[in-house]
Length: 458
Ligand SMILES: Cc1cc2nc3c(=O)[nH]c(=O)nc-3n(C[C@H](O)[C@H](O)[C@H](O)COP(=O)(O)OP(=O)(O)OC[C@H]3O[C@@H](n4cnc5c(N)ncnc54)[C@H](O)[C@@H]3O)c2cc1C
Image (cartoon, rainbow, N blue to C red; front, side, top):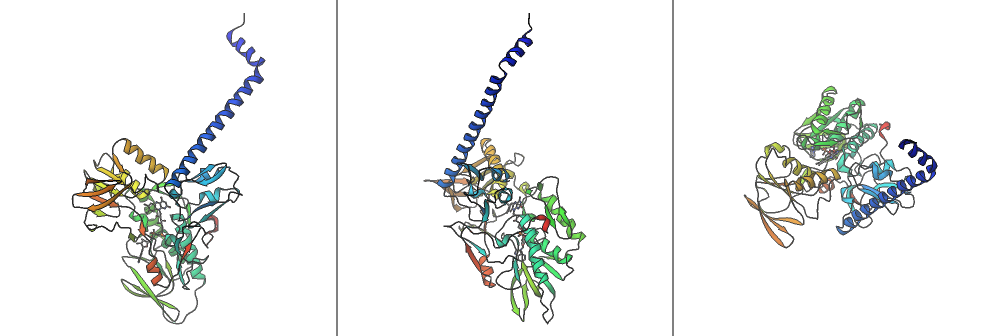
């Protein structure tokens, strides 16, 4: 008599072809249903974006459907999550408001079907006019970093280097005394990189900073996780971390060590006010007096003036526009206005059960339309645990010492309130730039004039 194993193996060998055929059929069915599920989800996201009239006007990808083969490489490359997805076998921007312009999709696309652009055909965005060398229409004045319209530390570092390199290669021999060859305004990543470039070129430079070294990163909340792609700093070389997500303290510590090792000339607590040009020399007005220089690099970022609600009582001490240390807030009723990553991350930090706060997120739209998938998931989990309350379609109407009056759809809600954090973006300093004679242009779905080289080229 045959054993059960022998019987099974006899059946298996007799029907081998049929079994393989069935297995392949099942795999094919599974992969088609998975693909259909993903496409349905992508279409849902797209419908939501259209319904909310969400558009990306800051730097974002534009996909050429004639070149796109629907390989999906770009969709997987985005660090922010489901921003680009395949719809009808073509890559489509399904969550435009979440795009922060990483550009990983553009780099990943094997067909060259993606271009990073500013604005859309119908909605323009104002950005300073700069040449491919980051020089403005005022000869000798450069703009580098986020002030030029592109966010991210990696871009700031590259632009600071390229602007300083061009400025230093084109120092004209002008008669008359100058205090420095190149004045760099702002000591964020762009200003640091420009300063290091000047050190490498052994030229005279000075970097002034109204607050402290580190720029926007120095003002991130304690222990905020920063996403950093590897960058190459002049003199220093590649700056790598164990992971591409590091606490801000670790990033700042590294920058601080570089600053000390290269004895960077950064003067803190000095504010740039403007300049005049006399015989080809810039006479720069600062809070510490006049500085005469041949070239100016504006690396001032865009965080100087936070966007306000424009309500009476907004000057109460309980209203703030930054979250630096979540530990300062304990057992308080806190409302946060905003639907981007800053607002989401502040809510997550403040809802830590150790602090016992009552956290309310006040968003204008239907949800956290402008934040990445990870933050959105974390906030949703905290809402489910009742640690964050989110009021959608809401607007603050009145700020009182002890409460807020919030309009939510047709009803008016009174919320007990100890602190109000307004994290709704910043006012761009374009008026200030225009006052310096720098032209601002409107971009309607156009790429930046500058083409950044890849890392190795630095
Ligand atoms: C909440 C939040 C989270 C972010 N997370 C990330 C992330 O995870 N990864 C990433 O790559 N990027 C992130 N970014 C973006 C990144 O921080 C910026 O793109 C980057 O810091 C821009 O660098 P910058 O040198 O151009 O400007 P900044 O870093 O803003 O530095 C500009 C400096 O100029 C100074 N300054 C301004 N005006 C004057 C003046 N008149 N006189 C003297 N000094 C002046 C400012 O005080 C500031 O220190 C985030 C931004 C925010 C707001």
